[in-house]
Length: 337
Image (cartoon, rainbow, N blue to C red; front, side, top):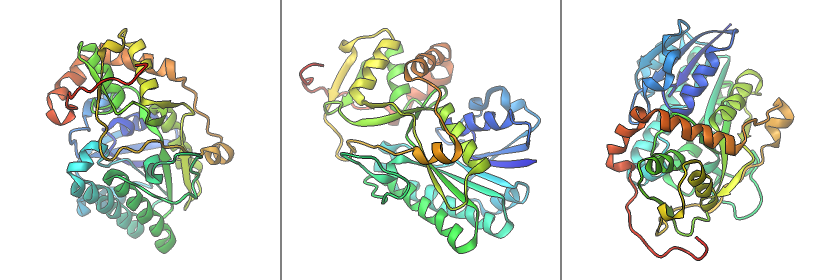
């Protein structure tokens, strides 16, 4: 039977994954380790918090003594805990490096000393950096251009080095942009949805032509579970959803599901570091592990918007944090907006 330590399990993706694990008959126990910073909330676990198979520990992955104690009681680790917001990394790069690199090292040290059957390190497509054409497969060079992505690329390399040097059975997943219920409203989809629900404008950087691949969080969790169960140690697996959109195209979808129109959209100057396009080749996980995303974007966005409509008490207080707001500096809209 599997016993699984999930770091960052009260965060957006981690909480969805934790609930998925708890539904598995061959999982005997799940422990969530989460520092409950701005993006981690016990409420994300919902009724799963009452599951007798779940143990919740509030703590930091940099706490060596705590991490060692938890690793001794689990034979699998799935590592979500990270500082993850791009804009915050511009102003708090040190925190990103400390948590994402040194925190990952703390977990890997414990796994190396104490032994685990599998260590899944959850990463991002942003480590490949911007691609104007083509797609990055798992052998592509890492060329991050922003502090967040650099901290994740560094933690990926540390994780792979622990496989090569110490034999820690590490697998890495790199996913495209996730969306779905319970996501912190600093991310673009929940930010736009919640602002539109409040009757407030939303903002697009530049001309809105930045391209991202959008993956429902449950599809990402399905891929991560496949890697946990059948991934080959030392291997990297890209996970994406197959829906590439410019931010302008994404905004059109969000306006539709929120019953709004383009009068609610303002354009702002692009930030200095804003990668134009990310793109990954995900054929490896499909070919080797049978992964297939199942949630269509339109249906996923509608369900996501419905969740925010039904749960204002979960997100409205978070919008009081000024760090989640984008300055409302208006510039003329591009033609065709």
